[in-house]
Image: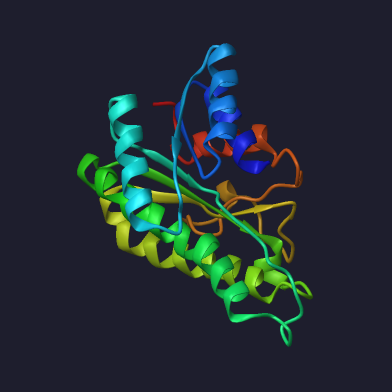
Length: 219
């Protein structure tokens, strides 16, 4: 998936990677393969719908890796598709709790260390569905559209602290249209900043090239 691909790419680029996942066994396997390839990676358990779990995962990552988390990729996401007229409250709420509220919990936990260190880079993983909608995905579309507003608000809160959202809405499988160019062609904006044209590999080479221009380096 996208999270695994990003983890592998960051590991190959020299980042010390903490893979936080509800499925710890899968995360451990990915971390093991990153280490075998010459990178540095660990796996930590997390449930992004639980604040205590998110806070503990961040603490575990920082203790094992020996430093503050400086780059956060909030990637957790689920779906519970169905037409809106038949969608249950729990299906709507659970998707928002994971995709949107879960991202917020991760950002809230990570930004404290970033502010203290006066450095941070945060990527929220969005979707074309959040921009254009999709039948049967009212809950998912709302959660991904919410990430756009979240990124914009937090950019303005934390920009003065040198914490940037270089991929505030990292839209997989979508190319910006209507004359909107890539990040480097746009004026001082870090919220709707990067796009990918490869929905499965998420254009990771392109992402890393762009990320370096936005000030993201291995740490």
